Image (cartoon, rainbow, N blue to C red; front, side, top):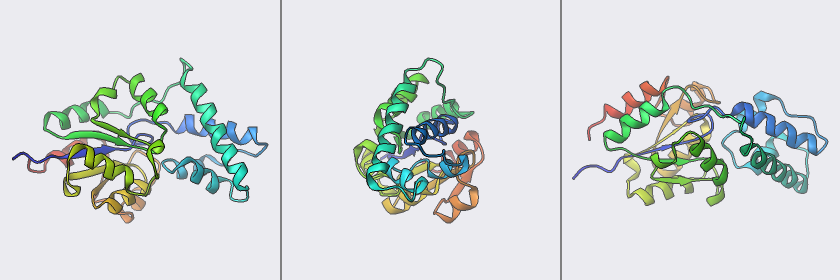
Length: 222
């Protein structure tokens, strides 16, 4: 029987370059609370975490009620931005070709992201990529990264075993989620955490480009 192989992709920092939008939204959310905007590098470090966890790291002295307001403000601003025709989160180079190659070789494709479902669907629809993925697993569905729930749900939906599942992402949170789910982790070098951190968090390799990522997966036996 043919192996059921599943490639699960993070979104922000892996499929799309959303850091400019996230930094902008975060700054506006903090300004609405009368707080100075966090440094860009600090914001990038939290991309991929559940929003409340990210806010708690960026505003460590804030009380719980203020953390909730920051998170709610971020969501409101993000929803408004999604309807802006000038809003753009560009795909990283080579995404479409790599996904096409994997699909032709029998890989099933899914997404597991800290992004909300509405935002994820808007992003994938804007790039005409929604139908490429068998299933979508988001921050709205339960515990966020590095908890393994999203990845386990993706595997259960596809009927794929952990040994035949690869979590592809740009952060240590993605790699730790893979390890926690018993799956494999493959890092990407174009995102928001450095190569050394990805490897230390459990990545079996780090792809330099989407063409390299496809080569790493396609050299495996079917």
